Image (cartoon, rainbow, N blue to C red; front, side):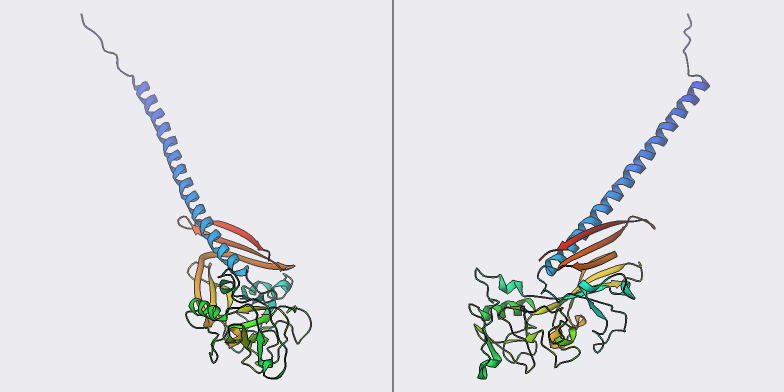
Length: 319
């Protein structure tokens, strides 16, 4: 007896091949989509993390800004030189979109008080209180009761890489800003201006004064310049500048933080230490309203060819 084995017909084979082709096509699309999602999510995570770290570093610095010293500058007009460094600036609180060349005000500069030595001990190493009688030789000295200026000097020296010192005769001295005055008011003698920090008019220093250490609880005024003295002060050894600088290869910006420079010692941010916070910055916006500084930072991350993904973070600094 002959057994006949059944085989697939041509139609059945073609049908199976069509189904396998459809399944393979769908599977490959799923694999591609899963891989694309992985690449996108990884780039978004990387961009978000870097943006968060960068903006937190900015916030940490701006938390210790001395009120009234935050300004925005146009670094392009006029071209940078030390003589005209401060000819195109505006108080941050007065910056608005109706100003001519508004978009050119891209940098932020401020003076930060020395929180490191202030909070290093259980009792602040500089008290922030000023006793000044203004008679005789004491006109060049004011007392800061409860302070330990020797420890302050050590901390400032370590943080500034021994560039800044409270020692009498030092060329790079810290400075005090007396805080009983609004430096952005309309009184010319006490209005905050980069000019009063020695960059434009060395005789106008009413808003900031260089100091050296007479002893542990007394500051010297080494400069014979006019000053307005109040009962409270902030000690500063550095100004700070947040500067976006264009990367011509990408068309985006590298965001740099400049520190360890003293405008009251006739320095600009380009004399300070430059540290890259983050690259591929596409947006940096900042405003100040009622003493609250708001920041927006957007960073772009490339995910292949001409495709980019952006991450944005916003922060408000309330002091």
